[in-house]
Image (cartoon, rainbow, N blue to C red; front, top):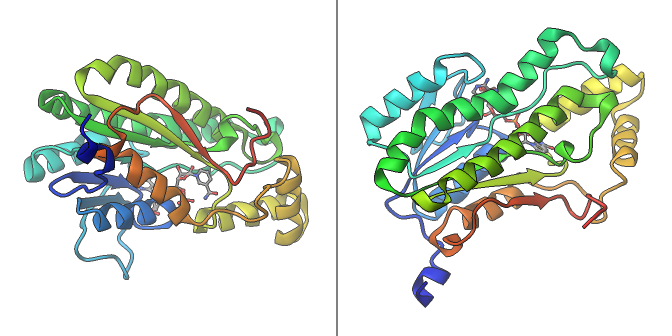
Length: 264
Ligand SMILES: NC(=O)c1ccc[n+]([C@@H]2O[C@H](COP(=O)([O-])OP(=O)(O)OC[C@H]3O[C@@H](n4cnc5c(N)ncnc54)[C@H](OP(=O)(O)O)[C@@H]3O)[C@@H](O)[C@H]2O)c1
């Protein structure tokens, strides 16, 4: 690798798709990649009123079977291919309370959103990347995949653990074909989804949001840095990982958690 490649974090001429790129971590990633020069496509179920008009917005509910193929066809028609795929959507619609409160539908929904949506989108967009012999795929996971919170979100953590395993397997398969695959695992991040999660958790525990936040912090052993991440903290790492400066990095799961995971 030449010195200029080592320091090249620009993304001019690259086309990047950010799923869930309208809010929270996805929006921060879209903004970070746009700052580096990439053309940005964002997808979500609906476009917020304050959406950045310079991004190409395509509406899609990626938790629904068939939507990934529809989205990929539209992108391939309009843009030819994507160079950078950020699989950011995820979350949980399951109630807190543990095993006994969870139905087949809760498990199915969380597995669909956190595991099958990224798998299906990769399946739909990878052929063009492989044809080009280059590309980068990022899977946004969570430290919950390694730190199960059974009281709060067991199906979500299990689905993210499966995503981590799949991401590593895919990176091994594609490393020699020019496509890099990486996982980024945030700890708690200040977003709308985190606020909603803490509200539901507080209701399930019969506590205030501050008390429920403390319960969650105690369960994960606290955040050594003493605060949740901002979405931009996650976006900064992603911006580096998808750039030419990270050309030799693949198959790694990066934890961005202010020091929360207690083991090496
Ligand atoms: N926040 C945290 O503390 C935290 C911690 C670790 C990992 N993560 C992970 O980080 C990722 C982003 O989380 P976030 O907190 O930034 O979430 P967020 O603020 O709720 O944003 C979610 C984004 O995804 C879109 N979205 C949700 N469901 C969708 C669907 N079915 N189809 C298409 N788009 C959909 C939303 O737009 P619409 O509602 O309009 O569809 C929105 O743009 C997730 O994978 C999450 O698991 C978050």
